[in-house]
Image 1 (spheres, helix red, strand yellow):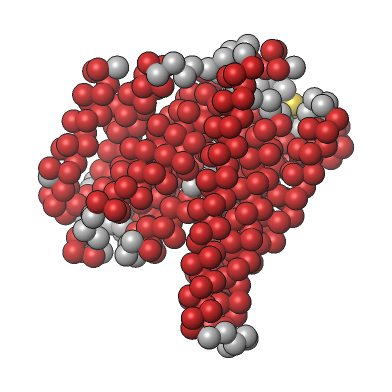
Image 2: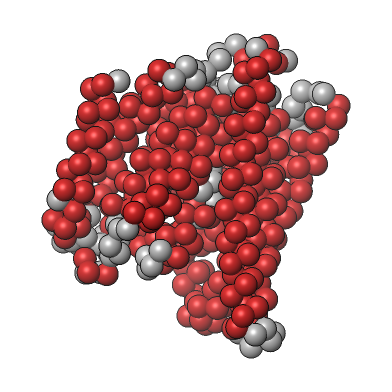
Length: 340
Length: 72
């Protein structure tokens, strides 16, 4: 792509990247991922071609994840071994998912591809988000500690000789035959909706039995590896706009430091509250545009004005999802600070 | 903090002062050029990461190592 194809930066674009970068970083530092689902469409709305938006987002994601992972490592929350095992197959999942994306686009066109992405958002985030929310509400009501799920207890009880690995920080001993598919699914989801952590973090908590603090911190290791690989892949095509990536990073490093500090302020179940809130609002956002893509495919009929309104409302919901996550984090930190 | 702040500011000043040259070079696909965005991101993350860490510390926002025990 020639340099002329990259946008001229206006003050409002810079302000947008800094603010969304900061909020996205804050949420990422706390729950291990977030921000990409607003940043990528946000950059596109500034006139950035889709592929450059994806590439530039990835180029800010891996240094951000590196800083966040280092910070949370110092707090003793990162299980590097678990992160690297998951990242190994996450990269494969991402590669496989990208292939599926290309096939869907080739057969069903741009609208078909958008519909596929939106349906993945709605189905995955609704199911996982409701599950996480139910668990968070249960812990809040009972005042109990986090418990290992029944599924995780079963997974930990399965002994497959030669495949058992002990993950010290997560304090679990499981067969890697459970870890590897989970990593694959995380990468697959990352390739579709750009936020693999929405499967990776709940997966580490409910399937492997890792504490939510460790799961959300370990996700940053996976994000680093996937972001690094993805950036290099796009850089080979000359598609990274380093200005956009570094502007987002400018705000997001302030955010990720704050989000990481925030995890030491609050009760661990707050991670689940934030994750569920963000997931469910984003699911609503994507559900709103499904009729638009169905219309473009000739499977529904909406007038252009309604389509435009749905698209705008959808984007507003995405921003709301991220802002709500940041609001809960800062609120919980302030409450904890006052009570101390 | 001042050192990391100056390093971070220098990175951003150079990037935007030589915006056109940087974009022309960083989007080249031949040779080792694709490594440039990756290496740059690492350099920025070290300089700006250190600065933002100190920033919150100076602002008085620091981690609570014993927070979990207090809460639980």
